[in-house]
Length: 343
Image (cartoon, rainbow, N blue to C red; front, side, top):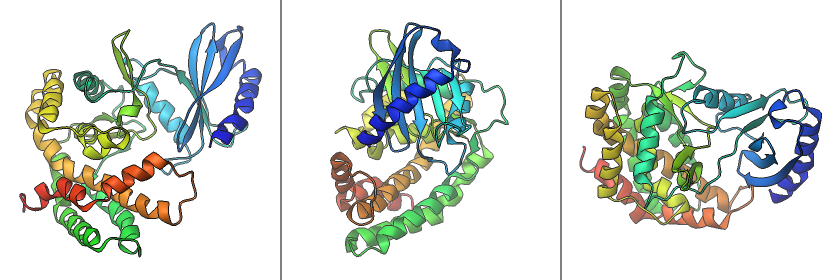
C-alpha cells in the first residue's frame, strides 16, 4: 500500500496542476503535496499552500457498496458544513476522467487522536452537537436505518457462516456464537422500538478514536471520517463509541461502567430534547448487543480470512487484535449479560 501511496502522488500533483478552475481556493501560490495517511478505502495526501492546508482524498474502494462513494461522503460533509465538529469540504470530482475513482478535497485539521482516558467529556459534547445539528432537508441522500437490528442480523449471519464452516473454527466458540446469532434472531423484533419512537439524525457509524482529531491548543474536537454515515438513531454512534470492540481496536482501553455513565451523563446534559434524554439509556441498552454482534462477526470472518484467503496487506496489530477478540472468555463477557439476563 505504501508503494501505491508513492506511485499515486505524482498523479495528485498533475491533477492539481491541470484543474486550476475547479480548485481556485488554492490560489496562485506555490503548494506542496505529501503523504498523510492511507486506509483500506482511501489514500490521503496533505496539500500545503499559502492559502491553507487541505486533505486530498483519493477513493480506492467503497464501504457502502455504491459507485458514488466519494460523492456520498462529500454530500454528508456538506450537510454538516456549519456544525463546527467536522471538516469543511471544498471540492469533489466523481467524473472518473483522471482517477479511476473519485477524489475529495477538504479542510485539514491538525491535532492528535482522541484519548479515551482524557477526552470522554469532549467526545460526548461533540456527539450532542452532531446529533442535534439541524439538517436542512430531512429527505436527504443518507442511507436510512429503517430496520437496524434485522439489517445487522442479516449481515452478521453471512459473516459468521464464514467462521461456522471453517475447519479453523474453535468448536466451543462456534457453539457459543450459534447461540448468540439465534438470540439475535429472536430479539431483532425489538427494533420496533426505534420504528415507533424514532429520533432521526445523522450518525457517523465509525466512531473509533482514530477518526477524531483533538487540537488541545485550540480546545477543539472534530470527527473527520465520513465514509459510512446513516440517517438513524443517536444510539448507533453512542453504543459503538462505548463498545469494547471499538475502544480495544487501537488502544488497550476498555470502558468501565462508571466511565460509560460519565460519558452519557455529559451527553445528556447537552440535549435540548427531554424525550430523547429520558429514553436514551433504553435505546442504548437495546442497541448494545447488536453493535457487539456486528463487531464480533466481522472479527470472526477476519480471523478466518487472515489465515486463509486474505489478499490484502496483513497488519500485525490487526491480527493480534483479532486473536484477542476471538477468545471465548472475551466473547462471553460481551453477550452473557444479554443471553442470560434478558431471556
